[in-house]
Amino acid sequence: MLVHQVDAFCGEGFLGNPAGVCLLDEPIPDEWMQSMAKKMNLSETAFVWPLDRYEFHLRWFTPNAEVKLCGHATLATGHLLFEDELLDTDDVLRFETLSGLLLVSKDGELLTLDFPAKPATPTKPPDGLLSALGASAVYVGRSEFDYLVEVESTKALRNLKPDFAVLRKLPVRGVIVTAPSDDARFDFMSRFFAPAVGVDEDPVTGSAHCTLATYWAAKLGKTKFDACQVSARGGLLKVELAGDRVRLRGKAKTMGEFDFEP
Image 1 (cartoon, rainbow, N blue to C red):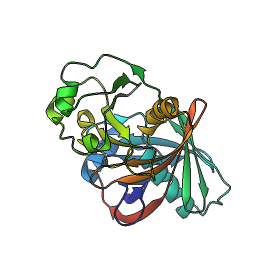
Image 2: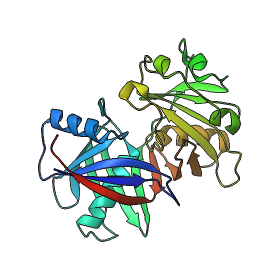
Image 3: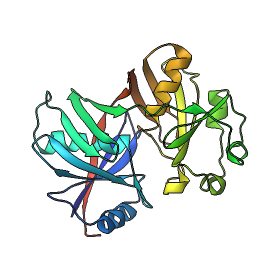
């Protein structure tokens, strides 16, 4: 079985989030997909097979579990399909997923994801959350998948040293932490921690920006953003809130491929 490694939401150098992508002719058993994702040991590995020429079924697995929404592995999958299937740039890919229909289009080097918005609502922080982050909060909310925490500054964001053992016990996929940007090129910055699904810190998280877009739109009074995820690798996203949808734009680059059985 051939599995590609693709860097998504990348810029110059080694920015971006590596994803595994397995292009299939037909579905394979769940345990094979989970085993393959564990072997790849990336934050997510995507498995995709055709339903029609421009329509596909798509699933995502971390090393530990299947997840319902993943941005960077969807961007990586779209990148590979446009390359391998020799699709035209005016084609739109349609993916049936656990989060409904997702769309991917291409304009030059940029790919655009059309995803559902995942707004957070204010909530009382659960016991252990803020102490595990080691930071005070400007805001705490909860979306369908994650907690959202705003901290006071990018410096506080960069200096976080989370207690992953505590975060792993929270009843959510992960914790999004965000702050206003101290770099004029960006509107906001973020980090994402998901030890509960086997990813202590994700390099770049497209799906987290489905929550961040709605949050920062309300705070900043705008709907288009340049965002930076300040993990060790880092990554760049262009984000647009369009009603109940979020458009995420970024680049991807194929880094290699592996041939093995799970």
